[in-house]
Length: 95
Image 1 (cartoon, helix red, strand yellow):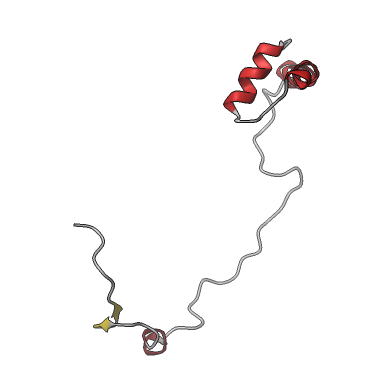
Image 2 (cartoon, rainbow, N blue to C red; image 1 turned 45 degrees about the horizontal axis):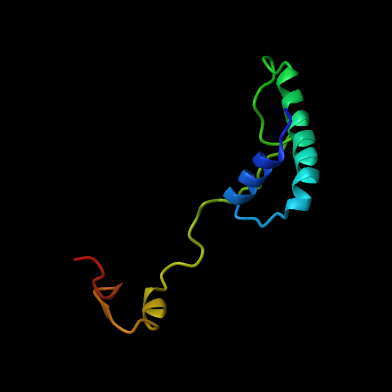
């Protein structure tokens, strides 16, 4: 796919990038080259390739899901400007 100066100017406007008239021809060539490389990916047969999230097999480090610092409600609420029945009191923001 070949881009012209008008298309580069439109892309620059949409991206809100100031591209001078003298740079549009050079950028048209560079962007056309990038698009050509991307179009080559359509030629690759990926029918038998399973989706993956990484190129190497990884397992996430996991820890037990357990409370390790609980039963500190009074300490936490000590910083609250106002608390009622063990909860923070905040101004109403939705009518």
